[in-house]
Image (cartoon, rainbow, N blue to C red; front, side, top):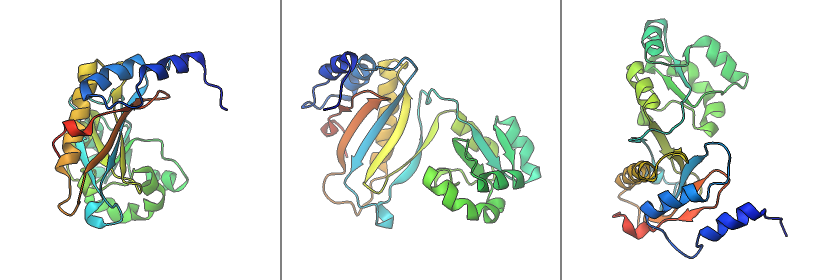
Length: 231
């Protein structure tokens, strides 16, 4: 049987495994049960009643969190020379094209978001096998393929996140840090949940929000009552 430290046992005892908490209560409790010494990420894990194998049920989208993510995202903009100044002016961490295509082909993916202009997409299409599994491939649906690179960078830096359902029908997303006040954790969570509900496909049958769990890094998960959301 695995050894569980006293500290972890104590926080585990604070979470009732048989209870579904309100979003407000979960947002306060997630701070109480944090066990890390660093500013841990607060994540939502949302299980949906969809079949991701069906194209129209492969839920994905973007949402701007009202209180940001609490993390400074590193943004790479792949564009032609005519767009470089705008990208740099908006605060992009890396800007260029050929040199970064080569770096990525060599295994470099030390960024959080990649923005690209439509004109350069043919050059970076071959990077799909590397960027796809890491959710880094630019996509028009998430606003990361655009001619307005400055606006895209500003949105990402301002708290815009992308979400995508995985093969198991679950969306995993970071909505803030454990240092956030409970009301900010709740507001960010609500914004994401609203976006996912709005993205519900017409072909999805039965219960849409099947399960909702909030957890900080290395801390126990807290089940949230899905019935409290209209979906």
